[in-house]
Image (cartoon, rainbow, N blue to C red; front, side, top):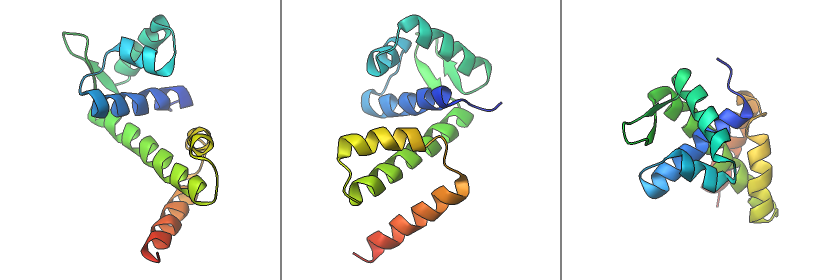
Length: 125
């Protein structure tokens, strides 16, 4: 199944919230993303149906291995692109916004080249 940008954003947010709070429920995602709880609930059930998340009996949302793989990939792109944009003078707030837009559309080839360039830049500092 091809994931849409919104699904990738949800998975990334679940990862971020679980690292921050330890436990994630639909209401946490809705609050954090400023979305309606009903919209989040529908999205979570689609992600569950496609094997990206599981619900525990207490309603806690847990990433499956597949969901974790996608979430980590999107989050890595977000962090590296944000760092790249701030390193060239973009404000941190704008860099985060732009990274969120770019992280979904950039090819793996281009991202790998950016990642290697950023890594080389840090080694030369």
